[in-house]
Image (cartoon, rainbow, N blue to C red; front, side, top):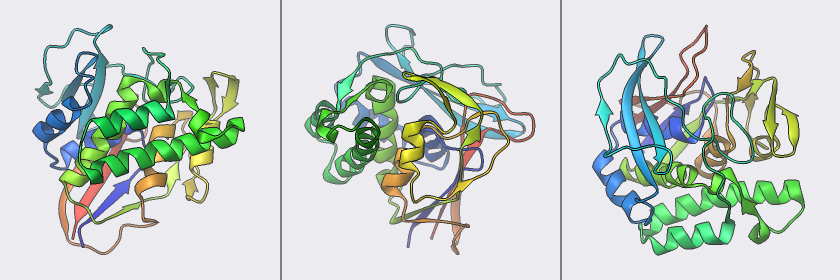
Length: 273
């Protein structure tokens, strides 16, 4: 059985998983072709490059918004370039770990579902992407005490987060995995600023999404796992625990933005049979 193991020893965000799947061998051209169907190409460019994180070469994905960045095409740059980019935050708060926010567009759950369905990405990709948004919407609905249909996403409704989630869905089906396992999830420590004030890590949405998922103690100050990362795990993972028995076919590393003193800030994925 074709298996993907997500080893999130430094947490997980949408852009880290997108980079790891590309690094693992997923088809960049297919990703670009499918993302174009969203009809948002005038709003963003996908910037992909190799970076070095404490001796580990990893793929870094940034979704650059057209109004803030002038990028002519998707670029795959050479390795050994120290990552200094900023990208964009996910749902309701500024991320200390992975993102610096540049977009505040709000979209409703219903409008995002409509956008994905109208893109005609294929039934499997559509189902995966909508299930991730559904998980995040249900978490927000529980936190705020409203029906999921009435939830209006903030940062997670922005173009960069839509690209991360839809892109992940495209690539998971491109590599044709039948089951997805994950390690336990470190969330970080400290406090972060969200729309409603200062909250401890993990943020409310992240914590809600991680109900039923094993988390791991971490001394790292900052947010290691974002709501988008937690939403993906909640929606697609079949099991949480150690690496399962399998024959390894390929390994990929996706880079986060921040650097830490004692470990490489990367997400590792292992594809096997």
